[in-house]
Structures are given as structure tokens and as C-alpha cells.
Image (cartoon, rainbow, N blue to C red; front, side, top):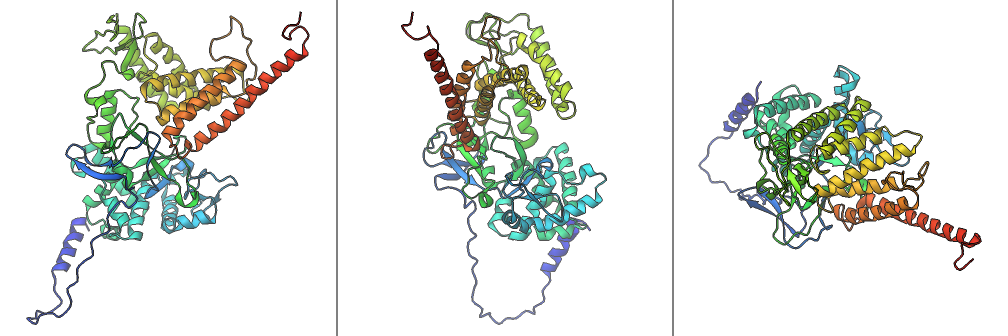
Length: 570
């Protein structure tokens, strides 16, 4: 039976009359439906939902928000961990339990901190548990015995609709999210169809009418649900932006995109009652936002060049960005620029096949020849794609690719913030960290510090102060500089200029950590003390300062104890 058949039957039933007609007027009182409860009850009083012709609905401020201010906090309607994280984090509060996690004894796939977290999650997991066991029984191999997170997340959305009621505020907020069903390109429609079939199979449904209790009355209804999920879901991250899963928050989904955002969505892990409040998504202002100004976050990686940003937004969100960075890009965008060939401090836009001539915006010196630059950029992009695909299957090959290609782009005068050099540098850093030797060596540590420093340099030019990716990169560099050196290098003319060794390294670590702390307070919220990472960095600053003080005291003691070194001694 098709969805159309089900719909036709329901209409026919509604048309039937089982009460004889009567001319006698009814004496029953007239009942008036109460107005529905307004949506978005978690919206703070200083923020409004407004509609514009260009972008549709969006969130606007009523008063000024200073950078580092928390605009709103909300727990997502639905969230699930990625398969690899199911055994490492609690499926209820999304935290790693210090004393270990407890596994669900039935599906043996999800884990919890304790009985409280399990009870909090049981209303949904009760039916999800049966679905996961059924899926595992029909899986062709152990590798796919657990459904992917989009399937599990959509399953929870449907179960939540059924549990809370189709007229509940929770369900109405889900239904109010933007859908692009009527304008989906063919490839997206096909992927949505496959996902819909997987979700239906996951829930153990066999006939279209079995979706009616979930509020899905037609084929268009299930496609709408998939489209809303694809358009509005966001990555569930750790306090250090590590991807942990996927979540759906209708309130956060109201925020429109800009490639120059004034706010970010983060999970600082700062709730006072983690068992009931986490995971808590917070929208933090990363620059001052004036009254009446629209709040913007970025849906994509804004270190990408304009063409790639536009392609990513069109493919996933079905719109073309019209922010200032896209509609009126700077004369020399640091994401697509070379250093001046005369080293005047200016920059030159990347050449292209159509327009190979490029000049420094400062001194007007021309870049020549440009063939080598175009070749380096093409090879760099190909290497980035190859290394990205190999990073989990062949670490050594991926690391070899990044190590070989980065110098080629550097020799072509590509700026550290330019693409694909910055992306390759960050990937190289993560690969070095993944292959870090268990027995620490000075060469391995210094190599990782140099890669981390290059990432900080690039991100600092591509992203504004207070952006979480930039703040976390600074924190990572500061932590590496604070690691005890296995074999400190002597300070002499033959030693590498960076990183320094001994006390100079400790001083640089302290300065870098303080910079990181200042930016973390912006990106993860002043009231959160920079979130979990900000608090860790504060503790490290105190430890490094103590080490520096101890070193200084040790030097003074040596001077006091060594004849001839005291001031005035002959």
C-alpha cells in the first residue's frame, strides 16, 4: 500500500457520517481551542526571532552583546554519539566517566556514567535498544552492526515525536525547521531516499501506515524530515571542538550563516548539573554585537577560499552566501594569496588560468612567472585530497605526502593562511600527533612544535581573534612548548632558531598560554572561564610560572654559592 492509498482511505473515513441529520439545534456549549503554546521557550529575552526577505527567519539582538558574552544556551532536542565514540562517552550527558562507564546490558552498544544517566535516557533508548538489536541481527558484517549516526539520530527524532505528541512544542519546533524538499538536486534526493529507507528499516516498520503515529502521512513527509535533518543538524563536539556525533537544535538552527560570523556555537562543558544539562550548546559572541544586529554563525570551514565555501554551502544547504566576504571580497584575501615577490610586506592574489597576471597590492610588483605557482597550487590540492583520504588507513603515506608538498607551496610564496597550504599544515600536525613516538625524542617534539606554530600563524591570519579554532591552536602550541624537553639543545650558533630551548622555551610557553587563555575566554564564553580548555590552560600557566620562578631561584642560588660570581667580587 502506498502513502497515497493511506491518505485516500483516511479522507474517505473522514467524509463518512455516522450520525443522522437533525434539525434540532444543539444545546452543547461552543468550545474554543486554546491558542497553541509559543515556540522557542528557551529563547532568552534579549534575543528576537525576525524575518527578512533575503534570509528568511533569523535571530536578532535587542541589546548589545560584548565579545565573549553568552547569547543563548540550550540542550539539543536530539543528539547521538558517533559509532567510534559510543564506548568512550556517556550516551546521556556525553562525558567520559572518571570511574568508567556502564554498558546497556541488552543492546551492548551504548554506555552511561551511572544509573541516573541511564534513567534520563531510558524513555528514548527503550525503543532504540530494540531497534539496535534488530539492526545488528540483520547486519551482513560486524562492521555495520551499529547503524550510522544519521540513522540513529533520525530514529530518535521519530521516537521523540511519538513520545511527546505531534502537537507538542517539541515536535512543532522540529517541524518548523527549514526543509529544501521542493528544490533538492537529483543527487541529494537520491541520498535522502536511501536514508529514509534505512531509518524505516531501523525502526522495524514494514508498511507506510506504520509511520502515521510518528506524524508522517506521506512520502513527502519523510523526505521533509530527512531534508530538515540534513539542513539543520550540527556537529556535536567536545570542549576542544573534536567531533563526537550529531545533534538537532531547532533554536540554534534559526541562526543564519555568514563567512564572517559574529558568533560561534560551542559546547564548553560548563553546566552546573551535567547529568541533566549536558550536552549544552552555547552561542557565544566573538565580536561586539550591537542592538538590532542579526546573529550569524558559520556553517562551514571559513579558512576555505570563496569558491570552495560557495560550493559547500550550495551542496549541503542549498543557498549561495551573500556576506561581505563573498559578495565584496578583499583585494587580497589571505586564503588565496602569495607573499610579495619583493618582500615589501604586501600580498598578491593567486593567479588563475584565465587571469595569470597578479600584482602586490602594496608595491604593485608583478609575480612572474606564474606557471610554477599554478602547478604548485594544483599539486597541493590533489595532495590534500589524497592525504585526507589516507589519514585513517595509511598514516605513513599521508604524512609523507604532507611533508613533501608543504615545502613546494612554501617555495611558491604561498602565504601560511592560504589554501591548500594551511589545510595541509593542519593535517600534517594532526598526523605527527597521531604517530608521536611513545618514547619522546627531542626531534619529534620540536617537529610537532614547528608544525603547530605554522598552523597558528596561518589561522591567525585567516580567522579573527577569539575564533575557537584559532584559540585552541594557540592552546595546543603552548602545551607543547611546556612539555619537558628530553634532550635540551645547547644554545649556540648552530642550533635551530625555533623552537628555543631551556628557559627561553618556558617563557615562550607561558606567553603563548596566556594569549590562548585570553582568546579562549572569548570563544568559549567569559562566564565559562573559557570552558574546560580555558580552565586547563589557566592551571598550566600557573605551573609554568612556578617552573620559571624555580629556575630563576636556582640561578640565584648558583650565583650565591659560586665564588667570583657574586656582584662586586674580584
